[in-house]
Length: 367
Ligand SMILES: Cc1cc2nc3c(=O)[nH]c(=O)nc-3n(C[C@H](O)[C@H](O)[C@H](O)COP(=O)(O)OP(=O)(O)OC[C@H]3O[C@@H](n4cnc5c(N)ncnc54)[C@H](O)[C@@H]3O)c2cc1C
Image (cartoon, rainbow, N blue to C red; front, side):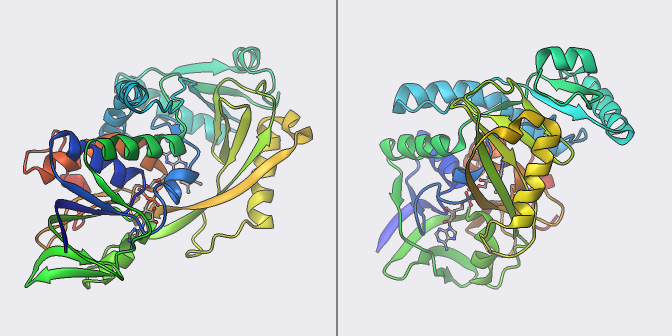
């Protein structure tokens, strides 16, 4: 039987970030991933770190997102230095494009709220926008410029987090699906896979969109469902836009390798991974509307992933009520890449029985 201080279920960006933070403090961590590290949403996302573009109103969730956004710069340095992996943290900024009167009303609220919160936000008129981004459609009315929203290559980031964690002693077990929870009366004391039983002082559910299924293993309701997102990428040679272009209907994100990523649908169709005519059609219409010149460029690839979605779109972070020894860090929806560093830090504090440096109360499972 294998043992650890903390056992983490799920090797996405959330599980890997928590594991790394715990390993820094000398905690013995075992992470079980049923397939490969980063093979689901964390390897499939668009990589935007964009709480301002999301238009989040002031409150605990925006605070959580902003704290995490600040952590990327130092984190990417550490990851590059210690693993050699460049996670391509690009300070691209986001342009939130305005097409209609409704867009302008929304943008006005965002502008005022974000200025009030001390964030940098500029209102660009059409001319200013087209000078900066000549490929954007002339139909646009203007944009909010959000220079502090950035991007990262999430697939590289998960790899780097996992590699550094492993170097610091995290035991990563790939190809090991958790199929049962071991209890001593109410207390959770470990998990079972098909071939092994593992014991741990604490168990963390970080299984992304599959976290609800882990809850079912112990009759615990974890209301997380998959929200499929379809994406496609276009080959551009790298000269289409410098900023991430964001609109109410989707986004066009220039990646450092010259690909432009167009995303994304939000669909509640269970764990159906298909790429559909309707989904890709919707993305192509949106992309052509934002940047008409994309129409003549070749499509490179299409893919999809499952966001872990909660009913109120806030993550679950903390102890699972009624199941001592069990914790959850899941349900990060469309912001799990952005939220990985802060989730790692706060969950590691909690799991070390320290007071989390930001209150986790708004993110309790029983809120
Ligand atoms: C199309 C799309 C675009 C996105 N764009 C962005 C973006 O631009 N910015 C942003 O911040 N976020 C974005 N997201 C959201 C982000 O990808 C997710 O919130 C984040 O990756 C969730 O991470 P996770 O570790 O919780 O889940 P996952 O990455 O899904 O990892 C969960 C892991 O648990 C494993 N697992 C499941 N069941 C078991 C089991 N029984 N035993 C062992 N292991 C198990 C799975 O194999 C998986 O590897 C996007 C998501 C999608 C789908």
